[in-house]
Length: 629
Image (cartoon, rainbow, N blue to C red; front, side):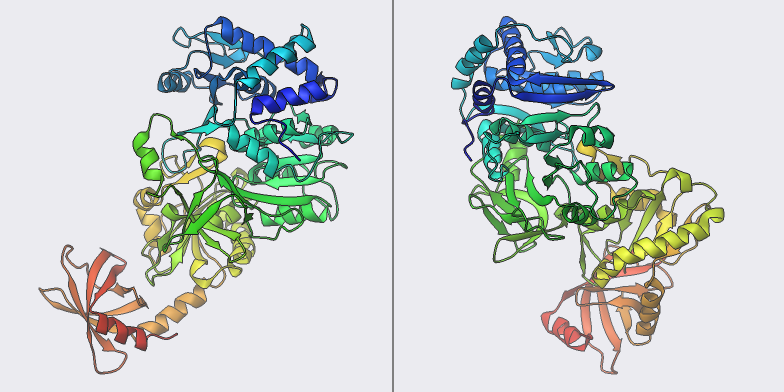
């Protein structure tokens, strides 16, 4: 399959020329059912491009697209693509946020729907809601759009793509047309635009999200029909989708979960989207293996994707070869490498131009030889199979040196229908614990609901944790009656969650100490996940073996341990050690002949003291010899 052009504009014009009478979109708008042809769409898009000309907005100028509605977004985006105008999409209803973005990108106008027209500091407003009838000569409109499209190529800037902001403030990624033309080739799966009936693409992924833009590009390359629901994203209606009967669905895991929940679950072999659904493409987050397996068993071809706005797609599972926990196979035109600490670095032919207005962030994002630092921990197999293990910045070490990436575990727990929020802790602690906020119907009067919540935790968390490595199993949870505040658990762009673990440990210090052996504060229900009691008994037996004498410079203290490893230990003390000094630690058991290790104090509080070994090498080698395998 060819891309039918070297820009998004050229792909649309090519489709409109070849198939002017083909359906461009079918749109559920409440009780209305609206249909446009490619000729209708061309007239509307050319009228908007002309309106930009009249306002003096030319190729290379910037505008803000301020709407959460799918159809106006599509028309605005394609008009800007043909005119060469760089657009930045924004969903928020906050006028100050829109004004801030306008200043940030020096926007020449705001493109919005009539219900959002407001005082944009004197900037011109272009309004469109898709309700007015298209008027004009389709052939002339297509010819004029063709003239515009000829002035665009793959190197032309297409848009500024907002990032989700999970690792800080949202950045604006400068993206070229070439990135979206490449996507049309990669995700076309051998489909042909001449096929009848044409492919029908489900358009519920927000156009502020890369997935929505990718889907539009693939659909335009195939002259496909766009299926649009009244509401989009997690608010999309599964019954409208089934009426539209799409053949190609591209969704984030959280949207897929929302649609399945509307059905009350999916029976064996039952179709989720309708009788014609053929492809299900998942991306934008860790895959939901259970739901993708269900979709595959219903007869759909499941494809998982991995990438980011900064470097586009780098891996997809081959159609018909998806497997649980596999995020993709490396594409032929990319170069991937994994650093010593497990971070993926990527280079593709369609890298971003940088972050708009943030040269320092752009420089920091790339290595000296041009690879993008993804910040993701992955493993890359010899055959190019990619597996995702969470964000590097969100990973930490337990006391025994075990590396834990809590993100994928939290994703799995969040998928449970009775959970609203989850946040895991364990940095420099003996084992993983966490906070759970149940569904609103289960909150309140924790004592009354204790038995029900305990059964849910033991059944569902026990099942999730049993499939994990021992170091990654959650041992104890605190069930809270109230939602976690934004200061520690914040939903940011595209429905992603930013979790601030250090802030949570400080804000809920009493609960954290209770999770590691203290008394539970009022209103907090502590529940052991199956296997936790056994782990703590094993730790108690270990205390009889590992004994240390600590020389703090002022006194000598004998301490026993809960945990000891090649990297450090957790010591039980009667009182805290004064901070800010190295510690000499003599091992007095096991074996009567002790040896001395140097250690650095990591943390010391009422629950005990965490130390990390610093040498010498010979002593560390002796410790390693004595530790059990």
